[in-house]
Image (cartoon, rainbow, N blue to C red):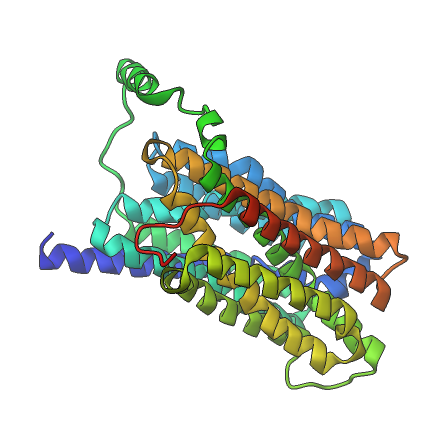
Length: 422
């Protein structure tokens, strides 16, 4: 690759990462505005949890179809389709949502849109840049998504304060539309054509002789090491989505219950800082795993997560300052092992089954993301609403699940990667 080609590839990475920021910026507008809209629409906590979970549930259904299609269809087409659905989902939320069912529909559309842009964005880059640049491109891609997801909370709070709760969703729709234009103009169309039916049959036959049908996941499930990382990742994502989905509502409750009035960090600002620091720790977590040992780092992160969750449930409701500080410690702790778990799954997968293994890993993760917000909402409702007791029960469940993840790690003993310290 010549100097001009390298410059062009770097510019492509910048454009794709910029587009991901613009697409993702509205992802957490709903959790940021959850306390206000729950009161306006008289939602139960379970209903609020369903609206949050709809995004993850739609992703679970959409990602195996949309990402798999990129093997036969130019990823740019899938990406633009996903961004288009994101525009419709956010626009619909601003224009027409007035309660539970319409909110579920709008969030589901946004979730399908995310399924068509998240991994597809990486595929866009993987098809067009060399392996040496791809490593940095992947890190930049992850950072752009993490940063925009964190800023999502502060942006929603700021825009809603200026122009009402519908305005943030209009802005999110316009932002995603700009991302659509960026990708359309900056990413070249793929020159490869879809294989003919005969060529496709030959490729499928070849795949069958190499190790089974393309969608036969049984060899993946038998890979004890990769599945250990994937199962722990499921619990990790459950914890992360519960925290992001209910963090603002939790701090609003603590502020009201403790009589707090004004603070340097509002609930939305706290979640923004949490997301930014979490993104940073996610980026450095895999390097830390190499230096300290992968299992050792994951074990420490899970232990600290369980402790933070327990403290948030027991001590957090007594003081807004304590709750905010604990959240700001808890967030980076949760994010710390994120990249380590994904790298563990990829690194211990059968190379011939790495794609299928990562598909299982991603599906398990987003199943956790779907269940987390629902579980918290259900616990709050079963206990009679938000109170110190019900929040203690919700965070107690999360702490218990972190201990379950520890037990899985200890029992299944996943392998480390080449270069990891034992």
